[in-house]
Amino acid sequence: MKEEQKIKLLERVASENTEIQKENFQTLLFILNSIHYNRQKTRDAFISERLHDSNLLLQKVMLNGYSMIKLISGIQIPNIEFKNFVIFNDPITLNTILRSLLETYLTFHHFNSANLESENEIRHKIWSYYGLYNRAKIKINTPSLADRYKIVKENDAKDMEQLLSEIKNSEFFIKLHDDKKGSFLKDLQRNWKIKFNDKTYKQLSYQDLLNSIGLRIEFYENQYNYLSWATHTTSILIYQLRQMYDSNWDKLELHNCLIKGCSLIAMATVDLISNDADYSPSYELLNQEHKDFLNFYSYHFRSDNFTIDKVD
Image (cartoon, rainbow, N blue to C red; front, side, top):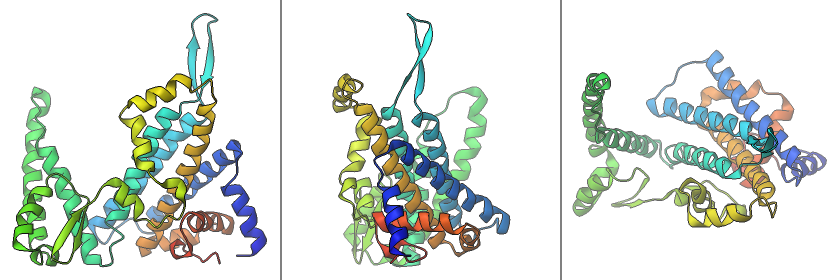
């Protein structure tokens, strides 16, 4: 990529103009949408359950993104006194959706980024088992749903048994110290974010997963905890709300939310294409402007090691 083009893209990606960031956000969502659409047209099949779930996770990223578009222009609140509507920015809800989008991308990245494909498969099985195990703990007493849920639980039990057997028979579990095997099976029911390290394993947090995606931008330091303030309605969030519209914090937060959303959607899209060769034809159908835009985003927030076509 020529230097003049890189400069123009940098000005666009790092723009302090919120309207430009809105355009960037919509463009990246269109690219991701196109990738999904073209993938379905060219090859609507997957060689593994993991790759199929990976596709669905990135569809969820897209759904989160389009939900955010509904909010970035502001929400209308009725003015009781004047019987009209007032438009407000709602960065709190935007950050809540953004955290969901972030978690979705980090989940995708976790079971597609290990050095060995076999570990990717086991990470995916652990994630699948954890979800089924926790669904089994839900009790439904509603008569109209009870019979249907009973069938779901019976099927889940069979799937869990199969998954647990595959996990126990994997090279990663077999290599664990005997004392670690017991603790691993307990932790498996509490946390799917697990990384193997020879004869032991390590439980991870979402912030650990965020730290592992190759970011070189300090802007993301502690971002998971920051986004959690809105999701869990912490006292810090309420302190911000007190002065949100007096200090223009709502406009600043909207701008930052767009920057983070753009980068996450771009990185997720690049990783999706890089992770599954059947997405390559979809990528080739993009015009050159969209290819350059997508690659430059991943280059800017990570490096040329995380691009499809090299930038430098």
